[in-house]
Image 1 (cartoon, one colour):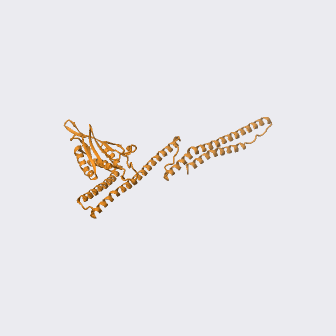
Image 2 (cartoon, one colour):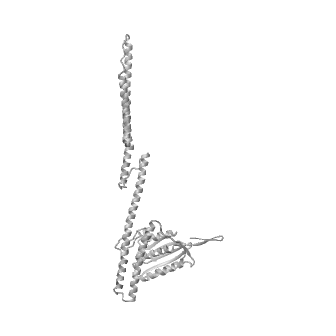
Image 3 (cartoon, helix red, strand yellow):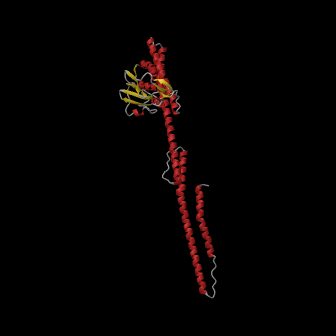
Length: 381
């Protein structure tokens, strides 16, 4: 039996019982025997009048009590219906809306008491569910965009690899120099494909916060000398000038994961190459000493970044040129990966840029220092 039916029965009893009791009382009053007249008629007449008056007063009181009970019962039914039944019905409708996937159905939160608490709890649940659903939808859209971006960007190197491989097979590259150029281009395009696939793999790990790190004490000079040597061969094949300046002392060390730090540098460099629009491209790598930290600057002379876009370039899936017909393409997660890795190393990163002149990426990592404590030597970053 529903709560509403139970209340209706209870208040019906409240109304009916006074009526029944009143009817019983009236019946008793009507059965009162009339007085017997004796020799002294006046005395008995007075007694009869008193009994009649009492009977009339009793009937009046019973009618008043019945009327008051009826009005009170109706008022209580109306009040309970408005304050309990109607809000519960609204809450039921809201829960059915949630069941049907409608997360925009709102309840007023200005109700008081237990009903107000129920409404507020519903609103909190609805907002949480809506936020979760919006995040899920956004993530699904981003995943679709990522797959679309990477599929688009893989087509370009694959087409180039096929074209140059066919040139080698057909004998178009008929000199050692041409053959070397074709092979180098194939190698570069294969590296681009490998980078995109690595980004996709790392993206899935970022979402679950499971980037694998293997930290070591790294000599800054030795590490970046090797890194620049490796980058230099790629830049030379692309016709881009690479300049390298190291201003830190030879014994300076940092705590870092060599592979992930190389990913940071490679992602920044590949971004510079992607947006290089000069006939004579140039990339400058500078290692600067800042007391307790080391600052790495990677600057290019590409097309630069608009001031309105600069605060957002480290956001996931943000691309300054969202057109898929653009020559640059890009998955839109390269710089977000860079920021994540740098911050996981205890550092921070930012960018400066001027449109038409180029962009400079700055990131800072703390130095490793030996800390002496008696006869024990320990290290801290």
